[in-house]
Image (tube, rainbow, N blue to C red; front, side):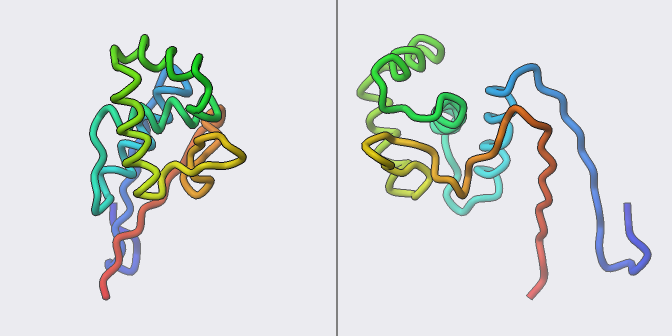
Length: 119
C-alpha cells in the first residue's frame, strides 16, 4: 500500500500466536532476520524463553529449557556465552537476563515498525 507522497510504502502484516512464548519467539526471529548477525533457531528459542522466565541463571529454568527444546546444559552455556558477547543477554545482579533494549512485555499485543531508509 503506498501513501500519498509516493515515496513511502506501508505494509501491514498481522499474526496471531497462542502463547507469549510463541510471540517472543516470533519477535526475536524478526530481529534476527533484519540483523547483521542472524541467530540460530535455538538461540532465538533461548532469547524468548529467557525473556518470558526473567532469567536463565536458575537451574530449574535451564532444566525446563532443556526439557522443552530437547537440549543440553553445555549447549545452553555455549549459547549464553555467544548471546552475551553479542550484547543480547547481560549479567544483572548475578543473573543472566535479556538486555532491556530487546525486552518487551509479551503479555501485550506488539506492533513493530521497521523503517528501511535511503541515505
